[in-house]
Image (cartoon, one colour):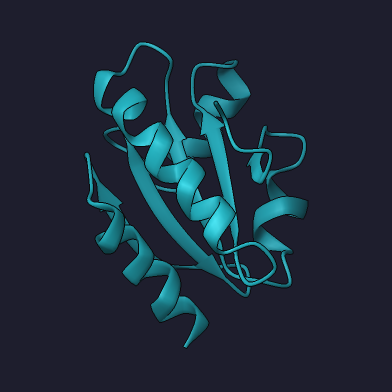
Length: 113
């Protein structure tokens, strides 16, 4: 079951949810047809629950529409799943492909440090 703490982000709210966030944000760029993206979903849900109030975890479906795809491309997404850490409106870290939960938690922890 998807976590209620994962924020679904589109082109309409990317700036407000990610770039203008008061807390660090882990962004998961994904697509419904992507097998590794589906495998990462439970990990993303767990991280969202564990970091509530300290950091934000959001998902961007790059297949929603052409504008959402452009958001991904404008941030350098070339493969999915792509995980980007934003802090203070700036991208601070990036990982591409399936990742372990500790590796993604390390991104968040580094942004919080």
